[in-house]
Image (cartoon, rainbow, N blue to C red; front, side):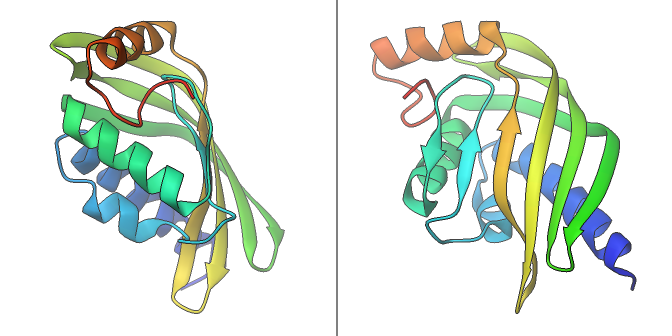
Length: 152
């Protein structure tokens, strides 16, 4: 399998795992990530998560509070930066229910992938801020929900 196909496969697995995470099962998503201090994420609800512990906590928090989630990665563009690092630009489109409120997503996203001994791993995921998600997450945090998911 070519390097580009390996990266595309990782991206496909990322979006399949994203749907699972947005329906209560974060484990497939967590398995795709680098588990080191270089892991970073910026989700559409705001905040920045630095290091594996924060990234893992954010994914676990979102997966507990989002239901009926589905997000597709569209307009995917892959750039190999080094033999072992790739940048992926995409548009993420879909919807989900957070704290009982349905939200649509249509946002630009970036993935940074790094190849290690076990294949391609996600080291960074960034999605544009989606104000509706941020507002719902802030309300939920104020009432004790959406742990790790909102602005930090």
